[in-house]
Length: 589
Image (cartoon, rainbow, N blue to C red; front, side, top):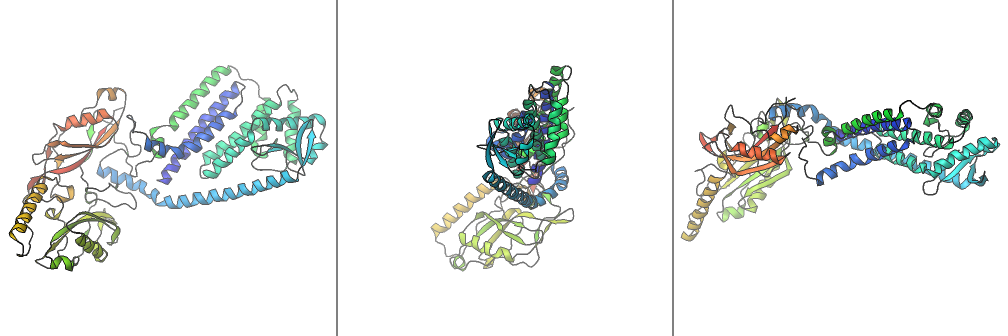
């Protein structure tokens, strides 16, 4: 989500700025130039939040990574926690629009300032002052203008100053030009235009500007005893010069003249090396905090649903009750705005309104005595209408049957699903049977025997007219028997069972890998497997959907051999069920 990414970027930039501030103080204690930490902080704060999602998508998941803000805490906790965070996602489009508007507004200001500077350079009179080529303008300057070929620009009133003072001014601007300070100024401009919503980035750009001026003052006064006279010169020029944005200037009012004068007159600190070491330690701590998994996780793409981290336990634990999802669908975490809920996540599932008619039987198929079924998937909106854009065919016996279902969807009213009294969107799977007995399509009913994984013994021969030849009838019977065998072997999904599979009470989780426990590494494994009719896990179906470490995966796989489940059942008969089960590994404090 954009909002969460922005907050993480602001916090990351702020911590980077704290590290730069500590590094600046360390360099000041050693009497060294101070702009480098701020320049590095500005570049890192600008590039890393933008590049982190791409880098994370190309790199394999680190073995020690724990999914930030998305630790699996079981379905009830996940629903409650995500409801508190989901409101932010609704404002993503508004935030993006404001971002673009602010950037465009600042860009217009930058273009206008560039035009003003170019016009001032065209109208300036070239001269040499103390052997230095300068551009004399009516009121602009003293400043350095230009990026590729910077020039010193001074106002005409500067010619009235005494020779020594005028030489100090020219020396200061020459130091700016030789140090390439105009490029650093424009780096700050580009950063704030690209991320105008980041106040920490504005602060870093401002501190970089101040550090540039302090460094330039130190170089200008190297070997110059007249610090007091230079300070008075700064005050004089600040009073008379016209403010110009985006150029390094001798006495820019925004550069905090008081701090610059204090920096010039500050005495050497005692024990500078020891002080620098302590400040570098503070900078390191700030960098470590900026690179923490929680902040980094939000920069590299946080999980939409959030959940508080459960109280740490001394051993690995499994998640809440196992859940199973529809085949071929993508899990949408509860509480995520705009995404549908699954049946197991809602209090009351969506149902068709009484009296709803089924789709029309395609005339060509009815004449040809062709029967069949369509298993369709779609989303029922919170107002009971069907989102036809989400229509998906999971199984179909004929393309014409599929088109008949697709055409009829918009006319099918539903009673929407509810969760804790609130109407929500739900992902629905419904079968549509086309039978020649009635000459029309039967109403879809959510019962196991009409789904793609039908219960054992419920798949019978289709009702086909007696016009078939003996060979055709033999082929149909063979195909029906083969279909029955396949369906009997297929596992059920949660929505197809009367009662889903669940772990036997008192079951223990997998053992915590000793080497990871010693290293303090936490993580989780999201596994998929089939629980058979006896309650045992079919290890041949074991599949890892997500894992933070290969040792966690092996521990889960080993534990599943001994785990026992109460099998799922359909109308009292035990059946196989496909489960998705989270296993959380957390180290106690």
